[in-house]
Length: 375
Ligand SMILES: Cc1cc2nc3c(=O)[nH]c(=O)nc-3n(C[C@H](O)[C@H](O)[C@H](O)COP(=O)(O)O)c2cc1C
Image (tube, rainbow, N blue to C red):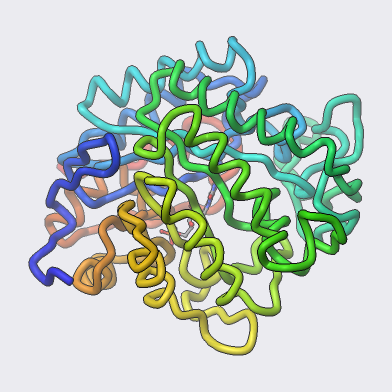
């Protein structure tokens, strides 16, 4: 506990030297037609990359590790050479501002639609249970929220191939000039689907006990760390979020197990969404309120040295409180959409622009590149 730590102090995070504790959270914007990054995206990230006025670290929008890992219209990928080449304009733009950027690696699992899958196939999942959630498709050029398609259960023999897809994606991210990656294990997507009892009804080595449900996550993390190093790898967890129909009867013991398994990997950071993603911070699943401080302590007690990054509904006073209580980094999502110069605004205590909902998912430059900066 260091009550003197401020958001504007530097910190070494694995192999990355960050100029501040202010992180831009991963934010899907559905503006990557053809699953390629583009010049508009480079401008958007560049606007937020200056470490004095913007973010000390940017985490990209979730980026699919494979065609099968896609679940939304116009989201980017990182499985092909063309995608790698397209992302270079983004990493170059961020680095030109002196910023740092990691890529969020994503497999949506069951949160997809046959129209987005290779050959129009069913999405894949730990178990053949349809997620009661929506995905975003483009219908006649308009973003539409649509029910997800019924998934098929993955055969255990397919899992090494998906682990390999994560590994390949991490290698590609480094080739595209990223400073590292964040494995997306949150918000009800594939890794979280394996973790949580509501979506994992398997009876093999990947289901049932906590140990078994965490196996896929461990295999993915070991593969990514082996490929690019723990000091360039982070992970995002959301122990109790109901996002995308995620549920578990006993999240505390599950995530205690997960955090102990992550401790020896030498990760750069662990990123924890507290509560319901984008919703109440005190959201509860299971028999008791989730104890995030205990999760952090368990990680440290198990030897974990990665930076502890917190997210969900943070403003300046709450961020300062989190730092005083031992968090190392604070990730801001919606505030960074509306305030490209969020760092400067936090330093001055505001004012802050508010986010416009209508332009969040899909569209052009309006609500993407035109939020005003101070003076
Ligand atoms: C438009 C939008 C897109 C999002 N996309 C992602 C994403 O790609 N990956 C992810 O892990 N979380 C995503 N989130 C969740 C945010 O990263 C963050 O957890 C959430 O907004 C809460 O933080 P905030 O209160 O600072 O906005 C998204 C949220 C919003 C509003």
